[in-house]
Image 1: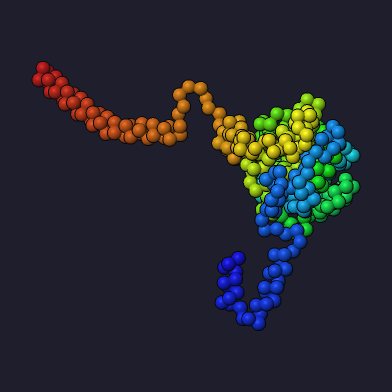
Image 2: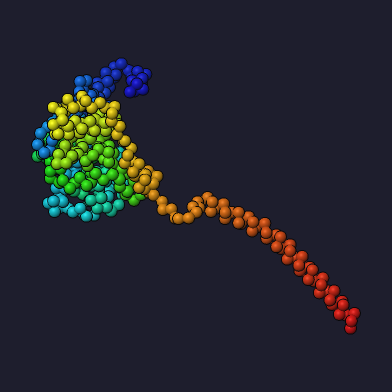
Length: 387
């Protein structure tokens, strides 16, 4: 930005500077376009811009903080896209095992990826898994094209669905959540979406609580910090773009009790995890009549006592497939391990030794031949004298 203004200073006359600056201000101040994560309320109970906690058993909101603040949805968008795909499966328009040919546009979609390539043939089920675990924008684009016939048609379906669910303060511009002007939602609307999604398709949690997947050697893992760390946690979806900060829809059950929550606008992934842990702990305390309110419980749950491991599923991926991000595990045979370098060195040594031995063999052969010729000549001379 500083370089831009320096350029204006030295290359633009004063008469033309005003229109340029006016245009720049209009771009920067456009509604729903943010350059950084939203502000965190000064007197909030959580270190996030907004949050909401819901008791699914009693259908009651237990806590909310700035829940109607408009924020970019980021990859939370994929929950709506998956919802639509499952609607089409239920209606019989498509099947989980339906083959999907990946287009060039889908394969080239940037950001977080499942690792699809153009002309890959995958099932719809594999794409849904890639959306949930890898947060694959490429998988989301492929699903949109397949289910909707085209991305614009699918996005229109998304907005119709959102309105039918009662998401009154949301607009979607793409199927994956990559930054787009005019795309926004709220924590309250995301709660509305997730509640309807889980009630309609409870089995969908199998996608969201899978930790690691491997698509043709590209290993990706779930970024949900609760999986494998918070008892009873089994979903749902993470999200991040610059304009939103770190978002999370999450759910967990203790016995017969299940809570559903949304956090949006956390400043970093660690804070997102800490506040998710705290919010669930506070909610279950209220459900168990151990606290009068979530706010009161949060006051007794200091953040510094929580240390979620934000790299846990990444390490699981490394243990399962070896090497981490994109490297599949290599099978190691039993016995002495011989590397390619050692094999090459051994082969070169044998060739060198053989080359050294060959001159000596030739010299020995010549010497042996000469000795044999001398012996034959002496024998012939001796025979001549005896005759």
